[in-house]
Image (cartoon, rainbow over all chains, first blue to last red):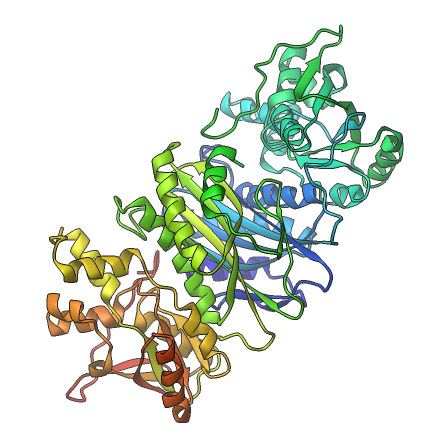
Length: 320
Length: 320
């Protein structure tokens, strides 16, 4: 335990929660899960140059490290509570740590999430965050419940983060509002926590779009033993994406681009309108993009009704 | 989530536990903490070349990555239950992954600990493990309760792991039994889980010796607002350590060497004999090495009663 760095982070992320009996500073934290709640836990790692461009601002790295994990809780319909942080960095860069902690804390405060443990080590810039949330027994959203006939929906818009990465890599002029918007979507993803909570009891299956729509919807299909047919024309795309990229490119980014952290979920067809209305009240639009079918795998139909060739695969580390 | 690698690890580490409602394979695991128990959580990271020598066998890396975390639970007096694993490695090295998983599983099975979540990413070899255990409310061992007059004890022997590291670095002939023993202590530390459980209700403060006795006992002193006087002659040293290193070197390794993962704890003086008897039943010796005093900091007295000069500091990443 590295006291000075973790203490800095603790100071910047301080949150009082009654369920934290003992926070950072001993060999372990002591926590209390509310009676009758299940504990949802997930861990995700970000490596500089793999999960975010080298040179990304420290505040953005801190935000995103927590956001990608909150997105996992969102996809389960869980209420965020606590996080653990493991930060490896090449040296004792206090400016980076301060920025990181500020970005992390900014997002944590939105959810009254408490950082309850941490470890800093010397190494290549790598951040692992473990998050903990609560969900009532039997109410968690899983990947296994999609049924043929269900509608497939996604929150927000798709492809923005992958487009933002292209803007960064091509050194797109930052003063263009659209490029700034897309880069913000890459660096500061919005975990759809409120949407996930609203989907409890309504969605038959849910996942967050981290590896790209086709890859992640494919996980729902594999887990649920079903297939899915997607209409490319229905994919929600931001005006920034459509302004900066041609139709085919933006469609492919929406199909396969990772890092959007929107929720992709399935809903019995008769409940689509009600679910969309519920999410709209939260300021989170949801678009119907296709339907669950018998069979396996995800198919995509273009505007003219032709099935698109495969090859639009989301990336998957090691297995690409 | 990288299915192939994490699936391999999952297969090799499979443990059935009723409190795991949903394990690896969705966006988060769903877990149930037993009613009335507090949850103890900790996270620790190991970086190749920093926390273990480059070239350490994969099975040893897997064992140690879990052991150092179980040691944190041991120091709290918590019963291990679940772990999350974040593994960064340069490529999809399945031989490494299999070895890692075997070492991890071997230790996990001793505690029926279930791996409930994981993430593998491409990057420098870095392993973060988050562990979860249970402890009855108010029964956890903390760093804050040491009082002047308490005895200071440690389990097992000290300095072995640091000596083992010297054996590795100096390419000490591996066929010497003593060197093998010390290297095994470095690579396969024994988390003192049973001892931690036995100390509940008896120890006034407890910590695991990861950074070295002086550094870690110093944490107890700082947290408890006390000092500690240690008798160098009482430091428990293995015969392997004494055989391979001279008296001064072995003493200094016992004072400052990290990575032993023994427990250092304080006990009211009148309970020392009973606690030692309890631990002996578990096959875990505990040696009285000094006492808690008013004041601050850790002082060390040699055989002749002279106070040793400071400078025997345990290492602390970044802050050394």
